[in-house]
Length: 174
Image (cartoon, rainbow, N blue to C red; front, side, top):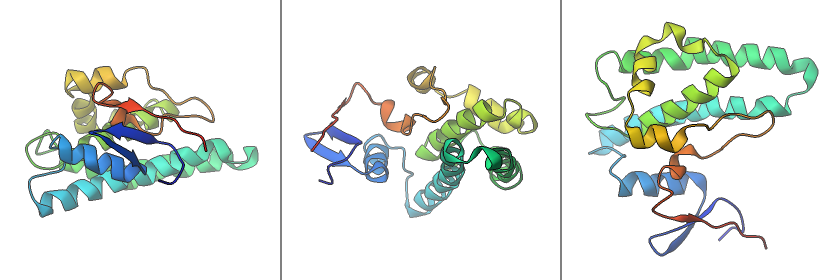
């Protein structure tokens, strides 16, 4: 459609646009809540994770003289604004929203892994997050094991990779 990647073939369709792909997979695998209220909360948590991931993605493109201040800003925002919200939500439930795994939990898992790569002790004051990301389903842990940030390059889409047996990646060039 837009001559870009990711392009995923699934269920006889060619899909593009990361968020559209994620929403489709979340709907197909019942990871998007039971009603509009849950979907709102799932989207809120997922977009909060995306805010942090966007900051992380900018780090490799930061000029060397600004890199440390950029990292300091990222760490502060994660520790003061984002992670406390997830920690609070997980203090009364094993899931961020509702009573089952959702794409909000997967988004938290992804951002937690990315943050740990940059700041190895960042989760030390967030015990509920630590418990949650170590007690995820085996299929999720297996699907994402070994994914790590490499300076200047990172895996942008952990979530679709979870369903690699359900579809194939199609890279196109026009």
